[in-house]
Amino acid sequence: MRLLAAALLGLALAFAAPALASDAHPSLAEMEGEVMCPICHTTLDESNSAAAQRIKAFIVRRIRAGDTKGQIEDKLVADFGPSILAQPPKKGFDLLAWLLPIGGLLAGAVAVGFAAWRWTRSREPEPALAAAGPLDPQLERRLDEELRRYDE
Amino acid sequence: MPRSLKLGAQALAVAAVAGLFALLIWRVVHQNRNTVAVQVEHGKTGPAPAFDLPRLDGKGSISLASLRGKAVVVNFWASWCAPCKREGPQLEASWKAHSGQGLVVLGIDANDVSGDARHFARRLGLTYPLVHAPTTIWDDWGVTGVPETFFVDRRGRLVDVHVAGPVLDGANRALFERGIRLALRS
Image (cartoon, rainbow over all chains, first blue to last red):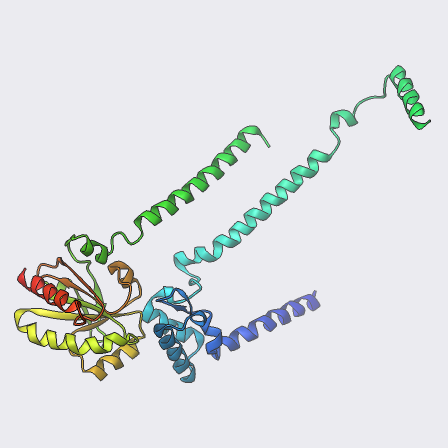
């Protein structure tokens, strides 16, 4: 049990460490994919417009000044509004954008599971047939004859 | 699954799809229909949309309501806009020429880094009121690029003149002068 807990903790740290490092020391290449060009409605890495160039220059200046990714994003949101970020914030109404896909996936999984359960149940022998009694002797004899003839 | 439950689920799915389809149609039909630019183009000179925006220099804010009684030239600009460099001094000159008659030039900087905008205004020596706005103001006014200029009369109503591009370039000069004249006349 302790081994499992230690393994889980190690795994969590392995994922958390790069994220923390990225927040403290962001790079332009990383942020270009997360910030929108407000004129062209694409991320900065896909735009060479004058506005995008200005925003890239601003990000570079703030990185050099030692700002964290969060601080740079806050400054951009203050100047442009929340739509400057490619990903919606994880709070308020925008939280729905994060929760709805997860909810949709869960609902889909439940629906598929239910359909699979229904399908497997429908393939089981009918209880009425399984519970049926022995064949009529005359019918059984006739069936045996038919099978014998078939084998010949 | 009971038949009634199955029918209910199917009806719910059809209703959800129909609802989403109706939402899509409504969005397409109403897209950009009520912007200031569209209203002005159709000659609808109703009240200009209210706003209260922080001054670019950080010293308080300016609302459109606070300018009631004055004719307002609402100019959208940004520091990355090359024609705006040429237009800024022209607007400055127009403001100085007409301020005695009650004209105010209000520069709205949007889709821009406010620090860059302050530097731009200082370098060009702009002294008319400048404010900074979030990106959404372009959508409200129907601005598709900068510079663009609108006019609001002394009663706070839109004037049916809209200048796309630098105000003194080519045919825009006549439009700009007409806009000022109509805004001052009210």
